[in-house]
Length: 87
Image 1 (tube, rainbow, N blue to C red):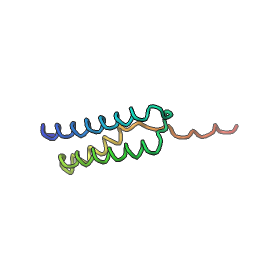
Image 2 (tube, one colour):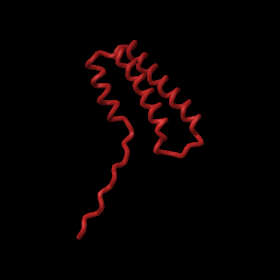
Image 3 (cartoon, rainbow, N blue to C red):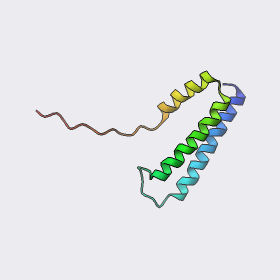
Image 4 (cartoon, rainbow, N blue to C red):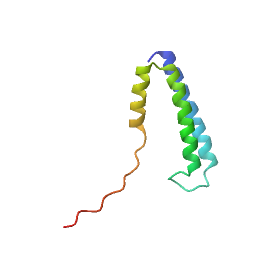
C-alpha cells in the first residue's frame, strides 16, 4: 500500500470508529448485546461507507485482500452448541 493509500484507509477507519462511538454513547441505556436492530443497521451503514472509501484508494487486488482480512478480523459470534451425544 502506498503512503497515500494508507492515509486514506486510516482516515476511513477513524471516521467509522468515531461514528460508532457516537452511537454507542447515545445507546448506553439499552441492554447489552445483542445490539438492537437500529444499532446493527447503523453499523452496517457505516461499514459500507468505510469500505466504499477504502475501495476508492486501493487497487482491485488490494481491495480483494482487504475484504478477506476484514472478514477474518470480525468478532465471531458463538454458534449454538449441539447437545451431547446420547450414550
